[in-house]
Length: 220
Image (cartoon, rainbow, N blue to C red; front, side, top):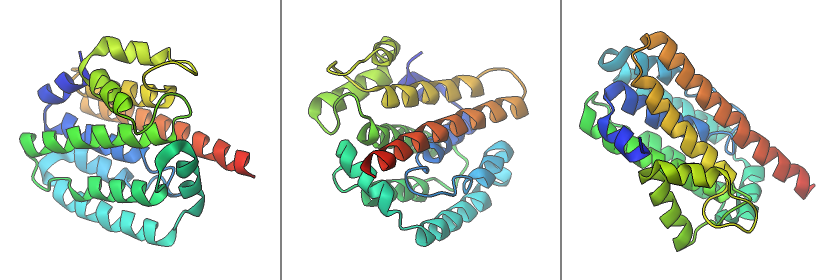
């Protein structure tokens, strides 16, 4: 099933986890502390009872981390990768994603948020992807196609230097977004499903951090 359809059919828990996972995976280029949003996962698991309070706490925690870490190196890395204004733009996008999270535990506002987080996370990964196009109309069209067509995601995985479409970093993010939603629609127990979704997010963090580290070593 396509990413767009999975988002359209997800319940509140799946939508909140999907948006949060996208946000979580975008932290490594910005800060050393990548566990800052972990308490919000508990808010997803608890649902309406804890989501508003955990969300407020997460916003304050992220602001504190970002204030302590200006992150000049990620800015250079993102600029070299075709990101233009670099980490400043990425930081603004991440803060906007978290800031726009709805405090109400309701399907439709969470669906809008999850969809927005999906698009923004893909754009951030695209800025750091060494393969494929970034910022072009063709790249934007590929992202739209990959979100709507599962076959396009498989095509993206095989992209090579000089090929069309998106690069492997974006393809990996697409797969993780789809898998998180699939896991949370699985009838397996809540605790196990949430843990697997968190593990996928952690894997994505490691991948993005490795990319940023390689670019930093290349500059030096």
